[in-house]
Length: 201
Image (cartoon, rainbow, N blue to C red; front, side, top):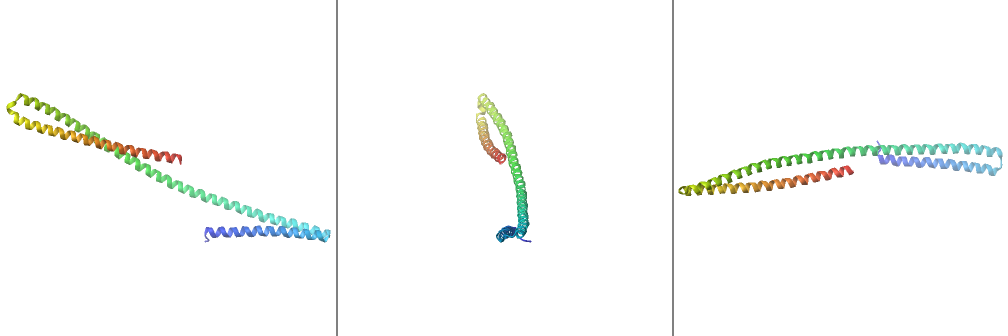
């Protein structure tokens, strides 16, 4: 099977040959009529005129065939381009759908992580409040029972340490929540930007 470039070169040569033959027929008809007119013989002029009409019709037919072939070739090229564009569009649509699905999955994952961290933060705040309440109760008991001061002081120190740890844990969880919210905002903004680009395309 000939390559497309070789086919196009052959087609160009055929077209050139066809047009050359058509021009040669017209030149031959013109020469025949001119020769007959110069001879001055009416039968010869009539025969040359008939020959010129026949040669002109043949040249017209050759030119028409060339034009029809050119139109067929152009239509074939347009159909091939349309098929290539359709395939490219299908590939791009599939890639875009994959990208949208991955972005949506990442957003859902970040939202789930954020929700779990918010639950942990709420639990930590409840524990901190409970520890603070216990610490206040221990302080009141310490005021009432000075003889057990050493023991209560130790328990009070432990309660304060537990409260401090709870405060640190709450601060860490709040920081993680802020980081995840920032990541979620960035992913959402990127997804919206890609949607806007796709809609403009």
